[in-house]
Image: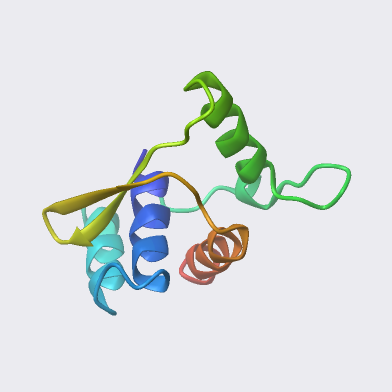
Length: 101
């Protein structure tokens, strides 16, 4: 769960919803609380080279009846729901998290 929070926070920054540096604050806090923020499965890809995390998002969307709903941050303590995720930004968020391990 902490990995998802860190990824969504970074995504929020990269997509312009959250101020730069807030992702660092959240990730640092999660680490100080003892959470691990990286798992090698984040790098697993399907046969086409697409991250399995993106397949998971598609499966989640299907489970929700076709409309994806992801909660991102518009500020610390302020959420915003989005209905699509940019694959490039998801990949950049994974890269960021891997660099922090």
